[in-house]
Amino acid sequence: MKYLYQQLLAFWLLIILTMVLIGVSFTNINKRTLVNQNYNQIRGYLQSVGNILSKPEVNEFESSYNYLSPEERLVNSLYYAETILANQSINFVLIDNQKKVIYPDNISTISDSILDDSEKQQIEQGLPVMKTIKRDFNGKSNQTSYVLSKVVFSNNIDGILIASKSAHDLEYSEKLISDNLLKGFIISSLFGGAISFGLAARQVKKINDLKRAVNQIANGNYEIEIEEKNSKDEFNELAHDFNKMAVALQDNEKEIVRQEELRKQFMANTSHEMRTPLTTVKGLLEGLRYDAIPEAQKEKAILLMQNETDRLIRLVKQNLDYENIRSQQITLTKTPFNATEVIKNILAQLKEKAALMNDQLLLLNEKPIEVYADHDRFIQIMVNVIQNAIQFTEDGTVKINLQEADQNIVVTVEDNGIGMTEEEQKNIWDRYYKVDPSRKNTKIGESGLGLSIVKELVRLHGGTIDVASQKNEGTTFTIRIPKKEKT
Image 1 (tube, rainbow, N blue to C red):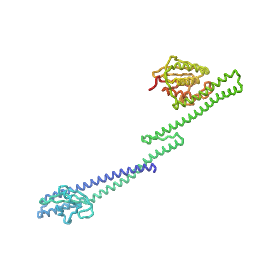
Image 2: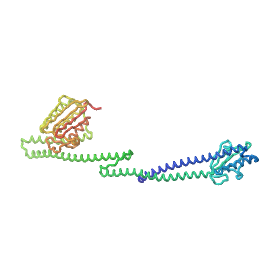
Image 3: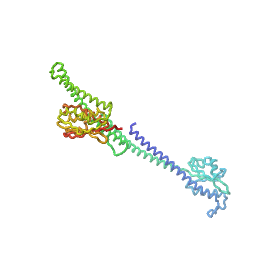
Image 4: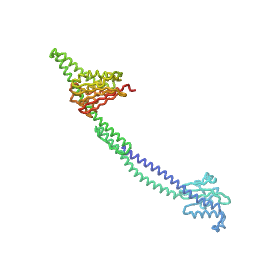
């Protein structure tokens, strides 16, 4: 069964159940109210007649009864009362304690359905009995209400006075109420069905919108968006979460495309950088094999092959380092050491490369400063950052400053090279990314992995690295490494 019909049926059944419960409760309450009113009315008449029977004195209006015996007065009193209450359909029966009918003459016996022995005992104790049965005094099928009460009618002789009234009016009132309730039930069911259909259709529409959006996502369209209403129901929250998911998938798709482009670029760069030294080494080896290289040039050729081989080793090592860092397969061995002395040694090693770019390396603070880090990884971080500054600075200056802060050791590497745009600053930490791909054939060379490795190593030390740059003005890297191990 479709969700629309499930919701429609659920709403409709709920409305029907509510109406049935209300109708049954209302009908029972009204029935009890009508029955009680009927009994109270009969009891009022019965009490009045009982008072007359209990006081058979003759007043000035009853002077014509002086010649009658007490029994005849009793009969006349009941007859007179019935005559007065004829329009109320009230009938009286008077019986003695032996259930012998005293009044009226046309009724010979009282059936047990009207008065049984247990009820007789209850009446003798002064408690009235009220009941409604389907038979009248004559035994005919007629819904009739009875009220039975004890009465003293002559010379302290006790009897039982029974008043009856046809329950036809009661049945009519009940039927009228039931008919009106039925009409109200039918009308409410129709309106409830229409309202249920509207509510169910509204929910199903939201589900169908979500279904279509999911199909769009499955087909690769991440730009789909579900309309969000002002309501705070679960469907609106689901639509909001779905839109957030779609935006995230869209961003992921763009990132995947960007990473794929970087990967292709890296493969092209790596292939080029590996092909160039391999071609050089192969050419020199062939020259040595066939004695095509003069004896005076052989040592230089061997040194060149060694440099090219080292270059290939560095390229492979950088890729291995990055993969090991990403898979958390490296372990840092932190020890305290003099960071100033380490940086001095690094600058001495990179002096030749800086000279190739006609750059000047300056250490602004030579005061000994101790850092708590992995010695080899600290060297790797500083070499990559300083070498990167040399790479993109020509005929300029690279300044390195080392300072102590409250909780960190702060190292800044500032150059006045080509600088970067804001977009480039966001991407330099990505694997394979190159700020200036056109400079891949420089004397220094780069693989696009250096800064990615630097960021991961700094993170493993519990530190941070930030960059600030202006295009064609220069770049400053700021590295912060905690003085002590974080606990």
